[in-house]
Length: 235
Ligand code: C5P
Image (cartoon, rainbow, N blue to C red):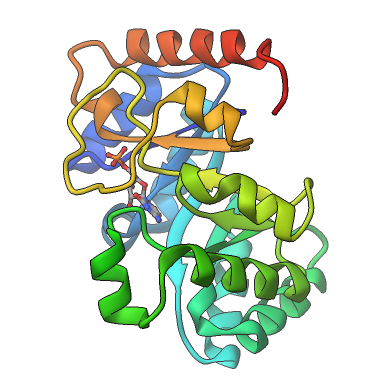
């Protein structure tokens, strides 16, 4: 299980300082929509230079197939290591993205967003008219059949996704609160032990790290907990 740190701080300088502070740790860095729209490709390149960590560009593309594939191709050419699209754009759109990216010499991992971890059951149903589990399962099967590499989901769907697709189909789970921190706007949160038990491949942690007085120390504590739970018997 890998730790992916969300660089969701307010300014470019704060995000670069955080990345610098975490340099040399065995982590991924996640760049979100605000940073990318404001700070662009130059920011991605600066991050690569100062950190050496792999980069997940979390732009959650959602559009018609051709437009989504056009955008995915531009992002892939930034040489980031992971990108994502919304599964609710449909299987045809996901197929088009993967077909286009497979024609490149190298491509990033491509994940599909299932149900945002901020949704509770009632809010999700108001948008999709279905319960979360059923929809996530359907989204995952579509994404797997389209040839994507995995899903962005809550910890509580990780195991079910692998059972419905393959053990090798990756799950990346935001909404992690390692030491019982405040949920903020998240609804479906879990700790590291639960993430491990549910076979999550990547955990995403933002506020519990960057809102702490000592982000590097929190990251180190999370990494040692990941190491400790790795020894737990596989479910
Ligand atoms: O601060 P926190 O740990 O809640 O940050 C979670 C990060 O994961 C945020 O950057 C958020 O945009 C992202 N994310 C999420 N739920 C998803 C997909 C991405 O929380 N389904």
